[in-house]
Image 1: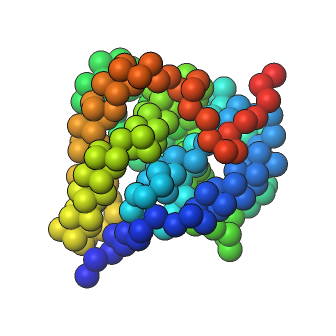
Image 2 (image 1 turned 135 degrees about the vertical axis):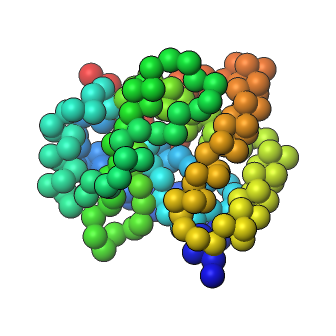
Length: 202
């Protein structure tokens, strides 16, 4: 039985992100610096789980306005150790705490999604944006990654956790190519702008 269900890219995913981003901004207010659509649903043409991934950038993970605002609006904290720190790439030689985050789920009865809350300027903010922009621009890499995901989903029917444990190191290999692309094109996170990411800074 295949529990990791991938579907072809859906144009409505962008609209679903807009709705979720607006809900996050309304709930968290000025605590959020920027909101971006990330992950496979943000890459046109990419197969993905039908779950919208959002990156909400903040100045501090301990901001009470952020947490209380989201909880009051019906968002819930996602349990588990993996929800407090992103996968740390093998090549990373700095403090693993640089990859810390929080994860919230949208309110019950609304669109399925994951809200990854990360600190501005940290490597995990860059990682998510570079992943999206590289795969959006490089058709060969996008098609190869989509085929890898399809094969992995068929080979690992057990659960999402096992799927993720295998996919993480493979993503690091993909990101090595993405970093080369970033150097060649001069890409930086500040150049990465999604439709609903513009939030005025103080």
